[in-house]
Image: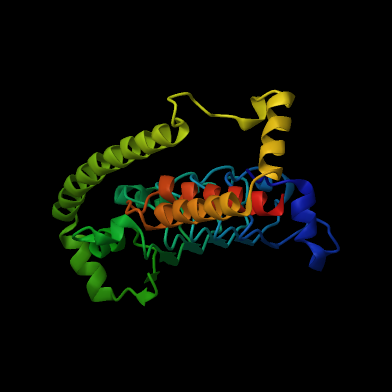
Length: 271
């Protein structure tokens, strides 16, 4: 897991002479960050914050950023819109390609009275019947939704049928929550199956084997014949193909698993 540290922010604040307390813009994209923390205490003057393309599952610890105007959280693992009430100056929020399925959570943005642009393209909730009407009616301060301007006539139509749309959305949310529970159970089963070895024992931490076992294993690997070496490579390639070609749902769990897999492979190759 990559943590947001003072050193990381200072590296990203070169344009501000590495001074973070007066920083107005910072880019922390593609850092494999899994949790938002510290930023609202260290960078109170922030106006623009880029956190896209990470592994963040939850919007949190941003409430003290009173001057924040633009927040980019595209390509993360976020499922609920929350905890942004304290961002009083927020004008633009980008949540493109996340996993927001609770469409009703957009109503938490009612308190962000300066919010003008919202992007939810690529989230499960955009497939709901009545999605756009619901958001337009729930957030009267919005001017643009998913890059399309909201006209006065569209806002009037959306407001008139809000209660009916809200009921329809609630039904679809319940169905979505049911599917998510199934997805979580499926991910948990897959994780359990991958942890068990061929002899039924559990292999959760290879670092727990004693030094003698490690030496014996290294000796065996060094003495492998070219034929066995080639066979081992073929088996590894087959495992790779199986991992990437086995069908699975696109979920926060599968995205995180793919990231972990790539990270382990990168470390193995480096070693």
